[in-house]
Length: 245
Ligand code: F6R
Image 1 (cartoon, rainbow, N blue to C red):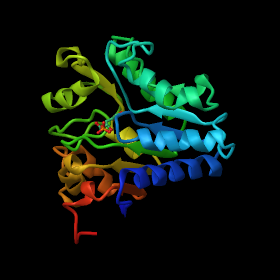
Image 2 (cartoon, rainbow, N blue to C red):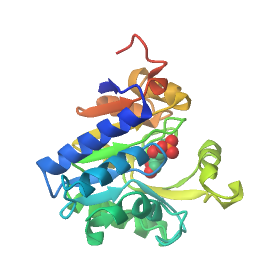
Image 3 (cartoon, rainbow, N blue to C red):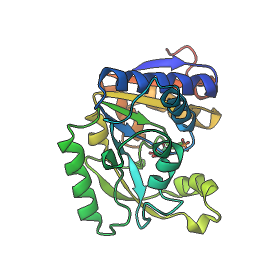
């Protein structure tokens, strides 16, 4: 794992946008794995700026998002698909046919997950997978569990995740209780992983991910076994890792 301390959220976001842009420059038809959440918003803004300045072309880029709430259509403003359109896709020249998010509207969980796994596999898995981390060490919606997950599957969200995500909904009762998520094995199949984390409330999760035991109770700890991971953080997220890297 290569840990990069960018000190601030702004610098972390610039670094993440630069790494994503470099991937697109190196391979214009690359497969990007993308994440929602608050952390990558600054990186997405950086990518939009690069596109607007004429230095980045998304026309051949293919994307696969990590997760989606079960039961929400892509037009639902609370869906992750809507979030991605709003935060990135609507502002760059990506071909909508190249955008993939698990189909939350398909409530047949087995079909939705099998279809998504097939699509990611047919694309040859991700060249670069962008990840955020949950306070409990989750990646995608792979929550702490007794074993690591494999392919795309339907999960019951934990109370802590529902509570953390409720800030984006009017009421906590509105937060969906289930989601489809890429599994840990699918994430690990990416050739390169870019983890972004900021803020003090991620400090313990970042420490456990990078320096704790590799255990499914901290799903992100599996990334220690991946040969090509960049952990890009601000000071606060790395505050419990001082002297360790
Ligand atoms: C989102 C996702 C989640 C988030 C994580 C951190 O697609 O997969 O694992 O990355 O919950 O969320 P934020 O960035 O909002 O702190």
